[in-house]
Each structure stands twice: as C-alpha cells, then as structure tokens.
Image (cartoon, rainbow, N blue to C red; front, side, top):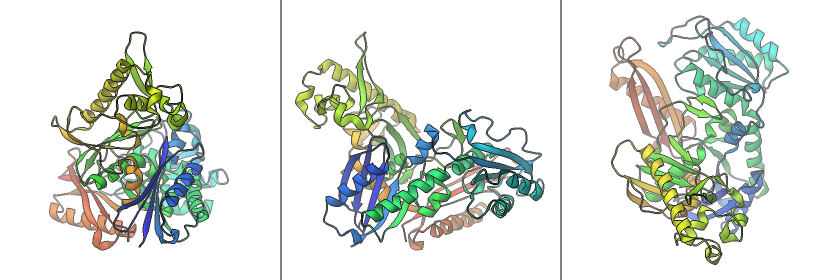
Length: 517
C-alpha cells in the first residue's frame, strides 16, 4: 500500500499526517512551529513517522502547506530586487508601477519601465511591442537583478507580447533569470495583476529556499521515492517546479487546507469553516467542497492584488490568545498571543499568562495540561472571556454568510477547543474526527486544478458553445498540471456580464480539478 504525507505550517503549530490509498488517516501529530520553520517541519515529520509502523519507502507523495511567502512579504524579509516592465504605452502611463505600494516595500524595485504595446479588450493590438525598448531596459538592469516582472494591458486575453518580452529578457539576462508573466498569475485589472506579478518575482529567493530545503529534508529522513507538491491558495496542489515559478500562489494556503480538510472529514460540501489556531482564527466558506474565492481585490502586506485568493476573514483569536481584565471589570481576549510559547506560558502548563486555553480548561470545555493550575482563575473572568470569544466568532461567521439564514458551522484546528458549540447563526456545529489536523489532511488529500478565463461576446459565440470550449480548456489545463484525466471535473463556473463593454460581452471563468495521476 502507498501512503501520503501531509504537512501544514502554522504560526503556532506544525501539523503532519499520514494517509493511505483510501485517504484514511493512519497517523497524525502536532508539533510547535520553530523560528527557523524547517526544524519544526522535520520534528513533525519524525514524530508522525515514529508513531506508526509503515515502511518509509511506501510513502509516495508529500504535500507541504507553508507560510513562508506570506511571512516574507509581511516581514519584508528575503525579497529580491526586481526589474519591472509594463507593456502598454502610451495608453497605460497614467499610473506608474508600484504607485500605491508601502514605501518600505517599494525598495524591491531596482528599476521599472513602461514600453509601447498592449491589447484592447477584444484582443486587438493597441500598439506593436517595442522590442528595442524592452531590450534596452533589460540591458540596463543586467547584473543587478535575477528576477523580472512583466505585465501587459489585457494580457490575460492575449499574452503574445508578454511572452515575447520574456524571451528578450532571457536572451539578455541569461537562462537563469526568473521571469514572472502577469498573464500566468493574475486576473483582469492591470494594476492589481501587475502588483501580484511583482510580488511573485520578489519571492524568487524564498521559493528556491523552501522548495530545496523541503526536498533535502525529506531525503535526509529516508523518504527517497517521494513526489513533492506544494499547497496552493485555491485548495489544490502544484509541483515543486510550479511552486518555484509561482510562489505567490502559496499565500493563504493554510486556511484553504483547513477548509478542504474539514470538507473531507465531515463529508459536507457547503458550510462555514472556523479554523482556530494558536494565534488567529480563520473563518472561510466551503462551497462545493472548495474554498469560496474572494470576489474583490485582496491586500497582502499593504499591496492590492487580484490573483485568486480564498474568501477568508482572520481575527486575532486562538488557543494562545492572552486574556486581560480591565479596570472596569470587562475582559478582553487577544489579539496578541503567546503563540508557540503556550506550553511554557499558559497557566495550565505552569506559566503565568492567562490564555484562552486556560479559560476553556477552567470551564470544562477542554482537558489540556493540569486543570489544578487554573483552579484560582475566577469563574466570573472565565465566563466573561468565553462570552467575548463567542462574540468574536459569531461576528466573523455573520460576515461570511450570504443570507440571514443559519448555516452549518464546522470547527477545525487545534485551538477549536476554546469555541463553544452553541453559536448564534449556526444551524449546527460539527467537530469532525481528526479536526485538530484538518489543515495537514487538507494538504494531503488535495487535488490538482486548472483554470480558464476569457472575455467572450455572446453575440458572436453562443453561450453553450463558449462554455463548452472554456470547460475543455480548463480540463486540459488540469491534466497538464498532473491530474488524472478520468477524474477531472468542473468545480466552479461563472459567466459575468460586462455592461461597460460594447456588445453582449461576458467574462467566463471556469475551474476544473482532478485527482493526482
């Protein structure tokens, strides 16, 4: 029998699971996340391997969900200098690249330029690509950058000019240059798509480090015949090579893994997922077995982007959230947390800090640590803290609902023990088995996806024909990414009328997903 190893790195804990060919959980573990991340990953891998008797040679796949890229952007660490080329002059010169970026993050731009080119909404050229200007720009940054970001007006409809600019970049800068094309990363909307592409280019060093480190670490543990995959933020997987090309797509993969894992464990396809960690709680919507995608521009580290992201609300509430009593007798919970130090700082572990976990233990919601150590915690304080926890979670659930009707709520994550099961707005609250490691399970059971997006005039192409062609393209893209052809199915389909374009113009977006081949 072959097995899969799933790993998910959170801010407080790193979870690991092993599942078999039937996708049943064989072993699970939860270890503290370490400051250098890799030590925590390997501690979790060693722990889960030692907890079962399977032969390491029988593990054929390993999936990793990591916060490395998110942390790099938020903390402004390990980002590389980027050369930025926009194709669209003179039509797209009104707003220069990175105009609305935070000042400290704008430093990653070594140099930027806007050259002639670009397309109209229907794919017609605004201007031919100015190849000489492209070549001159790349010659000017040669020796100063190893990563470039190229974006063009309406390149998601037609990317010929972006591809040609990329070829010129490789001719001038060499075969090792990392090239990010916006048509492969973002959606409609030049500025936000360009922003996502610049971030992707800046993450080149981070991506190389965590992909190579992950591969080497597993090899050191005797996992020699393992195919490696990284979790994407749409709840599906990509190969190591794809992760190196598109590291920005790993951002927010933690919440999506929990949503996918919760769906699998509960056998429910539509619900609100409340994933409680040690520091934060992520509340997301499960729609047809996958995370609901955000329909608005998403801000990452102060930068507006429009690549696919899950519709998730994050609040500063977790098992390690610090509980404080104000002078007026009111009680606050979070947003600050003891994080991975909970095993030394929480009352139940002999520490001196009151945490949400201590409240749960004191009120009988959880059996963690030494209950005697919270005997002195005032019941009045504990009840007020629990009321505050409920209020925060109920407000987050309401913000994710699409109607006033009560919804099914699934609790996941190791910190979910702090959440009571009588939540307003919930028709039922479900805590599935293995929910504490739902994120790692979501990583291990994930599928491979393919996307297709295009503007189509229904005056020129009948709706049924346009959707059929788009569906075939999405399925083909999924199989190219490694999905088994007979398992691929359409999981999302939308066609949105665009009233601001002439004719009966719509935007078709389709997502297909299938099992790993």
